[in-house]
Length: 539
Ligand SMILES: Cc1cc2nc3c(=O)[nH]c(=O)nc-3n(C[C@H](O)[C@H](O)[C@H](O)COP(=O)(O)OP(=O)(O)OC[C@H]3O[C@@H](n4cnc5c(N)ncnc54)[C@H](O)[C@@H]3O)c2cc1C
Image (cartoon, rainbow, N blue to C red):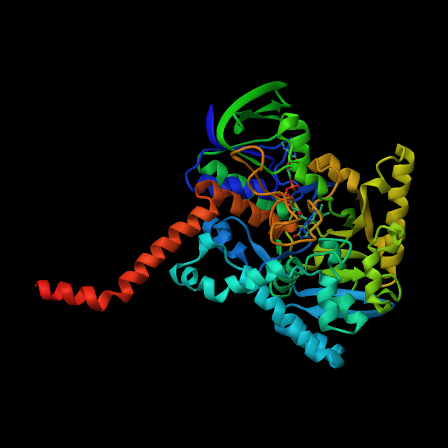
């Protein structure tokens, strides 16, 4: 059997690449080692209710400010999934004080100015830069119409070049614009969705994501698995194949070129060899180079990349919907340790690792606050919530089983206690909970350090990511959180879109072809008075 493209891993990056390629007429085979596709974008069932594995909020901006809009349109995803707008961006709690950041950039800006009037100038500047960054990055060449492509060198390219030579961290940029430490911490409240240190985290990644969080945070009805399933269906509806419970073992390389793969079908206990023109890896690049190809193909330039922070999650089933108990609470509530918001912002450059896991602050997401569609039975009044915060594999990996279980239990108890300060007697409403750790993520997603974010995102614009095309093996490409632009739903989806488009036509060729075409059209247009006159004289 020969395929055009074989994809290793059915996370969002692999599924998106597969769906786009299948829709563009390529014969696709996607291999996933788990029994469900989705990677971190999935749900699991407990006590007859679906529990969301990962998604709290997906940033989803306007046309021109978010590449995902073009991707979703191309795949006609609106026919398969429903995006639910969140009622507010988030609540931030510290020492009995609550900041409710509303949904919408203008509303959020106004709210923050009302709370920090002495920082009006800085807040306006901050949001203006967020907007221009999202606009600059909001389209890829493949999706630009004729006029957008023509104006690109004048409107967006200079800014992109400036970004490239002006790589700053989020912390540095905030220090330039804003003085108030509390405000800086508020603007960084969801840092752990990407990184553990604002003084290392790429400003451009922060700006792009935050603009679209403020302007369009969404949840996917039925859970993030609805999106993964929709992408898998698109592959199958367009003649492709999706195989689960199959582990990729080897990439076949001949004369330096990827020619196919060998994978193990765990159900049939068989090794299967298939050939293809391209292989796209959605798994960790380090795992691929260490285990799936000969040592001589190892890309040593990846050794300098560190893996990003990981997460723990306490998954909770509540006996009833919390909406009926706590009036007017938010969907997402970031709970800080007392007085943490007032601490100097530059202390955050120490990162989070030195702090006790319980002292790191966390987010409480109450899926019951929206119509999340996670209940399987219609008359089921229970709801789902999660506590989620930063963690690291080495905090869990070497613990003996009893200690591991005890540490998980203690973490959950501590978090319930902290949450009860703002949600009194919360524990009384709990029917069931379980805790996942970086060790769990490592087991399910096969990332070496149990991260869901790929390499640490210190540099935007490719420098900190695995190259899209392998440096050592032709026709081998990468997608997902380790690839450009980075981790999170947005990063993984866009990386898959990029990878697929590059299989059809590499970006540099696309740009040259369109530049030549545009130059020809412009030349024809500008010389039209001459040749129209000549043409007219002919008759
Ligand atoms: C608890 C949690 C909360 C999160 N919250 C958010 C959020 O609110 N918003 C947001 O934007 N992002 C969030 N994220 C991050 C986001 O989910 C991930 O960054 C993104 O889904 C990663 O996608 P990926 O394409 O890199 O694939 P992954 O999800 O890493 O999937 C890779 C897939 O490859 C498969 N695989 C690996 N090796 C092999 C092999 N040898 N053979 C076959 N298959 C293989 C794995 O089984 C897996 O399915 C969260 C993540 C977690 C864990």
